[in-house]
Image (cartoon, rainbow, N blue to C red; front, side, top):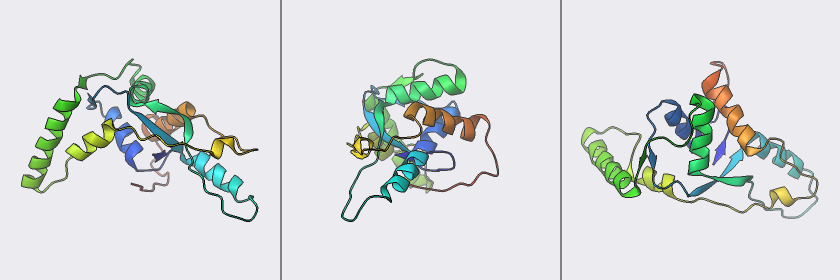
Length: 169
C-alpha cells in the first residue's frame, strides 16, 4: 500500500473514512499491512539509480508493518485524540454487511463504499518482505509513523486545496 499526500489510493480511502467519523472496525484487527510512504519509495528509486550494471529486483516496504488495530488507533489518536479503534464488528457480521451492500449496489446500479471484497481485503494480512532497507548506504528518510502523521496533517488537518493529486489502486 503506497501512500502519501496527494495519493488517492486505498490508504487515502481508509484515512478519509476514519476521518469522516463513520468508520467501523471489522474483525479482530490483528492482520498486518505492509505500507510504503511515497517519498521513501522515491528516495529508494533515486538511490537505486546508482546501482551498477545487472538486474536489481527489490520490494520496497517501510517497516515495521502495522496491524490494522495499530494503524486505526494511530489515525484516530492523531485526528480526534481518541484511543483505540472505536466501534468494532465481528468479521462474520462485516461479511454479512458486505454481501448486503453488494446486493444493494446491484439493484441500485451504484457503487457503495462497502462490499464483501473490500471487507475481505481489509481483514486480510498483506505483508511483504523487503531487502531495500538492508541495502548498504540506504536509509528511509521518514519513519512510517511520521509518514502517516505527515499524510494526515497535509490531507485532513490542514489540507492545501491547490496541492497536486494522483490516483492509484
